[in-house]
Length: 478
Image 1 (cartoon, helix red, strand yellow):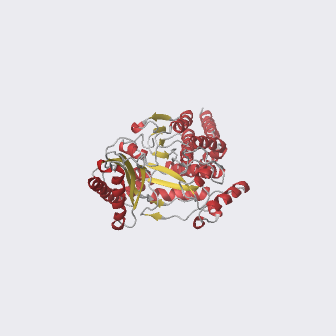
Image 2 (cartoon, rainbow, N blue to C red):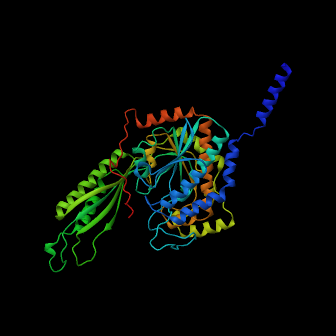
Image 3 (tube, rainbow, N blue to C red):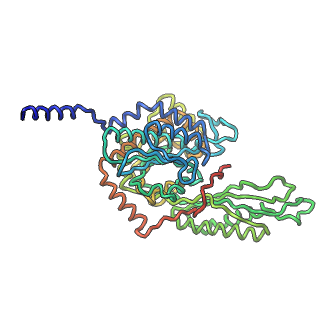
């Protein structure tokens, strides 16, 4: 009887050993096998080129992919029709992955290395969010496969976040408490190079200032009119004078979105759209309030009426060195983007279209920038900032564009619509997957990441959205 029990035990052990265990390397390799599939999804979103809060087809495509993979989908979260969450697994740690998919207006471009508008007046993925959303979905599904093959506690949750470009989709999701139970957030962004710094960004607050005057014949009875355009121009003049008296790191920019209909009619309505930025959100609050003062003064001086609508407000990104070092280590393992002969020829033609000062060595697409901690942001803004003040957050960038290319350009759209962009996308998916696997394997690192978050934001921090209690501006691109 003892021999029977002994041999039964041996048989059970051998049987257990025979069960194939899915290893992290296998999960990463599975992404290579699905490269064509995910490239096709990204290309479809590139073709849709839907602007903020109008990404119905793009969001549906990503939700279908996740739903078919076994994720539980919650649609229309935070009162935004094109926002969603997709979850798989149970228990802690909960790892959130951000996915964007909105395009930019007026940057339509075909996937060719010269300026060639695809749809006259149309939108284009000049910030590469078609790649962003697809890579994040790919990473989430890869992690789901690992959780399925290696049962245990842990949850992966993808956040479908619309309208990053000026619509602040993530801010409304943060405000709705959708990140309150998350232990870490991972994200990435298309770029012209590769890096995974613990880097900040610029805080940003925007508004549309609307002036209302009195229409009249501009030649026959101008004294009976009050020009709303005069109000806009007076405001712009005062704000431009103000530039001398704000911190050097500040950025203020605007476009006149409506200036009248005909020269011989005194404009009854005019509108100007302003962005105010600074590395610290406290300064953004102050600068924005001064811009409002200028608008009120302009209305008083031109005998017009002014009202304004805050469109979005973003915190600066709070770096998390703890998580970023893990992300950087994995990006180094994945490596940069290597061009084949066709891609190199494409890149050379794109390079020739850039300003001479921007032209750089195309070999930089292969390189990984050294790790840095950048406390003060510069350049752009992102609604990832608000997320990073709530949850320890780490991100990376990969070379989806030809080195030297700026975001929000036709050159970025072109490269994002061909294999250069898709190769960078795959590298991002692999890096996010590997980073999440490291956290699942060693969840104790989250205590250190959380402690760093509390140290950076301060123990007394209480979240308050810069955009206040306004509802999502679902029509801001209409």
